[in-house]
Image (cartoon, rainbow, N blue to C red; front, side, top):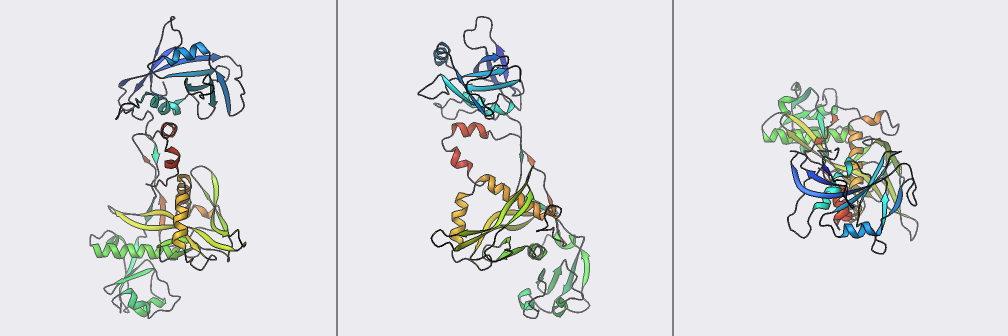
Length: 412
């Protein structure tokens, strides 16, 4: 019942199939006229052949197997152990060619419960008929998107500049002057108060004003929006400059090395557990034992406005250097090779790591990387609830390309 199937039990005259499972559409409850035969084998508390904590074997009776082979419907066997309330299932013809009577059970993958619904339903797909479809049996699941909400400060500073553009103004500023500001058409905007700083050298005295941030962030003028996006990008770079560097070629922020040719780990919390990642990783050449490259975890930040709210998308990537500081001559080739090997779980973990850092959760967990102080704050978004779950376990079992597809980078 937890699977959502209908079950019709056969009478006393059954000779090898105890009942029929009929699929239901999980959205409407409508039965689909797709059937699976089920034979139940029950034991009180006995152990199965070669049973251990993870697996066991079961030997079918020759007469039963011959009977099931003549069926025009798929048939499964369900093993029930009453003393421990354990139930496992397997398709009756899942045995190896050399010994078709012997079924091998995995206690995690082959458990007979709600999670098995899609794998069982997939047995009804008629593979000799193009377009045969069985809907997902499980209800919706949560999907994480690679995005965080940007919480803006209430006020922003504007002024009239002595220069038409930021490029012209930079020539008049010291090298150590802050750059979390934008000048376009002589209009200066920044979340930083320029009064009392070297920025006043490029501003017209007496023109600095404090206005509500929404006056610029919610503007419908495309030039104002582009200027604000540029300001957000510069502000993030300054806000995290004590731990992240900026790669101009890829426009990515990446973990800064703490010492030449030395790696380090960053601790963070994933969806459930505390974990860590080697965010700066030297690679040693086998031929001479020297450092060939240093890989830095990185992400490309992009800002988007949706309605009156602003969001930051986090696209995980890598930056390669020669020693932790100097750019690598073949960075693009190294990145392409790394991307080919990245699996979905690793990419998801990278996003969770960056989200953890951006939202400031690392302050209590890591002495190495404390939460950055600055005008911008970031908040994690709740997962989007999808109307249907993706029956991954089902297609992994049936699709010959499942292993290759599973290794792809899936980011929404």
